[in-house]
Image (cartoon, rainbow, N blue to C red):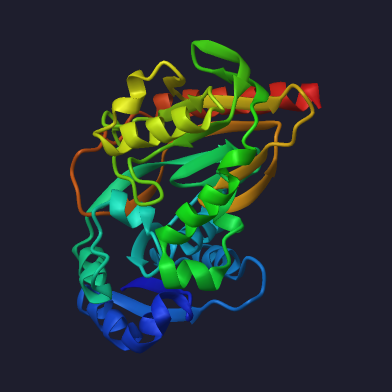
Length: 330
């Protein structure tokens, strides 16, 4: 019998996970899994450590039940293993961007569990930022540090509104940073206020970050906001909401790329945000690990699975070369 481990944040979703756990396990049992649960603790990387332990112990499915932070931790726990279990998601956080991208029900924990039981696996890209991993979006520059500046209690009570309020406080202080950004087919060297390296179309509750995104195609969507003018930044945000029209904005650099290298050229610190959590400072090399982990979703517009072992090995060789080049410069 296949084994499933539900790793859940007991405080997520106003403790709804705790109350629904027996029913969630029952749904997985009826789908043919021997199911068990693990409640995360305040210990750092509790979810990541348990995910790694479960994967090494031979579990076939790991369910990340909580917010985007829980999903990120679970992926970080298993991403560097040779044998990686399938991952399911039960969203119970504030924004649940990754679940939204995979069309996983967010209004009902049990409906999300039923999607997992249905078992539609999607081979998803995973991003590597130096030696850390992210599943949805990485960012740096002004306003991108809001996710770890907004108090947890405020996030829980007001959700995305809390970020907007905090962002409004910071807008008058935005100054451009001289960024050097390398990507597939190009280099940007100049002033910018922020950048985004995205793998899905959903971030911070917005669902039109890149209308042309294809899950599992091995490409990041890179956005560099070149202006630090408050009114132009608000105009760009408005363009995102207006059907992804920011892509053609004169102050936005947009590219599809399998790697991104970022560093500051004027000694201004750039803190890196990985799936809403602090991921260290630049210089950072982001590499797209194509179709690295199978994640159960509820949609069909994604790239065909890679079957060729030769293609996979060539891609891994390219990543090793990038890492070797980075090591030389340090």
